[in-house]
Amino acid sequence: MGSQAARLADWDTALDVGKRIAGPGPRVLPADRARMREDLAGLVVRAEGLVTDHTGLEVSGFRSRAWVMGRGDWIRQNLVGLQRLMEPLAERVLASKPDRTLGRKALGVQAGALLGYVSRRVLGQFDVFLPADDDGLIYFVGPNLVDTERRYSLAPRDFRMWVAIHEVTHRVQFSAAPWLRPRLSSLVDEYLSTVSFSSGELIGQLRHAVEELKAGDADVHGPGGILLLLSPEQREVFERTQAMMAVLEGHASYVMNEVAKGHVHDLARLKRALAARRNVQGVEKKVQRAIGFDQKVAQYDAGERFVREVIARAGQDAFNLVWTSPEYLPSGAEIAEPARWVARVPG
Image 1 (tube, one colour):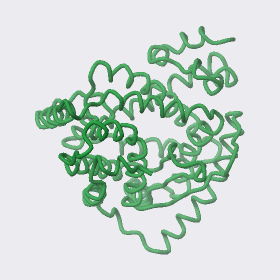
Image 2 (cartoon, rainbow, N blue to C red):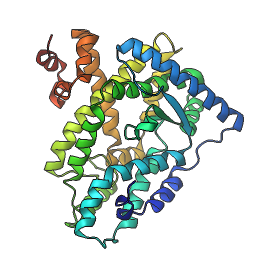
Image 3 (cartoon, rainbow, N blue to C red):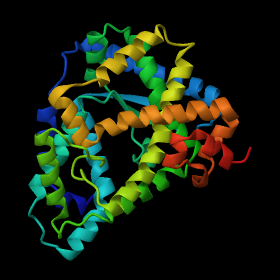
Image 4 (tube, rainbow, N blue to C red):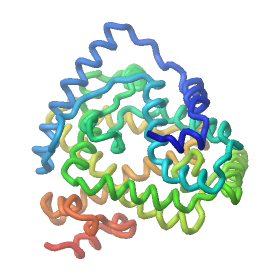
């Protein structure tokens, strides 16, 4: 796996930089770690049943299961996934410049810095690009869950259940719609096909991003890391990807909040805590804008409004057409105006 991508960047440097930026997080006693693993193992199974009952979607294959990990483990797993995604780009670049070594360490530093920061923020993740044998595996970053619970005085079991519902919903989406994975992969491949190392485009993107970040007015819309800024061609691909991700994230947020009403105590308190956690200021806010992290938060909000309005107007069965075919994925304009999507699809 990743034989060419391994030559494109220094992934050992990426892991080292990422772990140093991430830090270990709050200290958790061994007994508490064991309890968290036990809790989440049961919660994801329970959440899967609740989500399928609520959405009417079916899950095939392996039962959902939890992997409670540290920040370093999360970085390592996502670096493996990044190598897998970058393999087509690496093959193209190295075919034209087989002896290319310049910039490997710089790319490793960029990737590590990005993932190191994100590892401090992410609570859970369904990794859609895992091999088929790992289908149903859901990551939970234990130190971040504990840090949030302690900082906002949250009941651990309720908070973990709430997060589990969100991540399990992603697993249900991709199981109910097997075409989602190849669709997302094709969008990533299409985007990466526009990236050129030989032209100096990447270095220029990174330099411009750093300058904007220093100036404090970064207004970029890229996915972050080594792909910070977008050309016009890249922007068109990214906007289609953004619309797709808004549906996935918005639906997970909608289900997370609807299902939680009968199964999580003090939901309003959990929502306030999550909103407060997202409301960063100062330098961190600039960092989030520069790497596109604020765009992910916007995806949650815009996507959830779309899902909620479609279901209110047309019902759950009509919304579930989203999972039947790529032609029913909403455009960015339809996400902004859900009535347009409702008018387009069969009623």
